[in-house]
Amino acid sequence: MRDNGIRGRIALVTGAGGGIGASVVRALHAEGARVVATDIDPTALASLADELGDEVRAEIMDVRASAQVDGVVARIEHEWGPIDIGANVAGVLSNVLVTDTTDEEWQRVIDINAAGVFRVSRALAQVMEPRRRGVIITVSSNAAGIPRHAMAAYAASKAASTMFTRCLGLELAPVGIRCNIVAPGSTLTPMQTGMWADETGAARVIARSPETFKSGIPLGKLATPEDVADAVVFLASDRAAHITMADLYVDGGATLRA
Image (cartoon, rainbow, N blue to C red; front, side, top):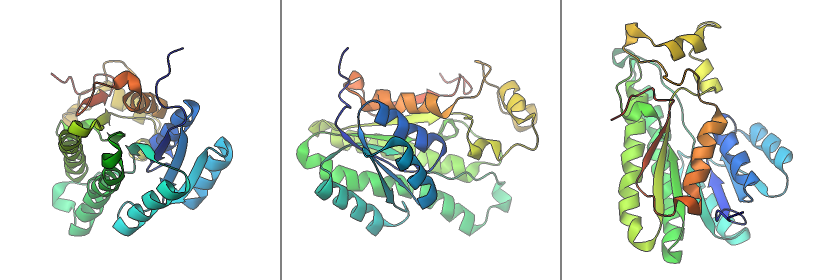
């Protein structure tokens, strides 16, 4: 079997406490990576580390705090070794009309979803660049590329993180560091189900929502966190060795993207 270049590498994953983040940790671990799982929820991190064993290290880290981000990266580099894979998964949802969005809510969403990606990616780029190797992947959203009703703050934050990652990829390409984006659509996570009013929520998302100008999902199903994690693993692997600044939509065709 062809080696995909992940086994034995150190990967750092943000938002690892649940949903897509936890699935990314499991998928990288299954490929033989040594994974640093970061989140602000110590209980969820401890449970994940217990599940997966010694090759997964839990680190409390708030992506809103540069000092914490820089400190975790420096500690891992000193105690474990060079970080070769970074996955920006930490994120929050905001499902509020623009006219009802407060300054505080706007800042909260931007600070985590966009500025958090900046802080983590900057710290990783600073240690990867001298080694002239590494991969940084940002889990964004298909909302970055299509307007969504009552999701302006979320969509804007994801659009910012997407373009930031592509620009970073342009800067780092000359030293062989690849930066890519995975853009999920509706995914079966607590973040998604928290928006549903009743048990018909999944069916409504799949079918479409004319009242909010949202198309349905042509494949007729929601993504699973594992679907998204598999895309992250592919982009992290040597099988994507000539792919950088790409924006891979994992949404069952929901955006009907040209």
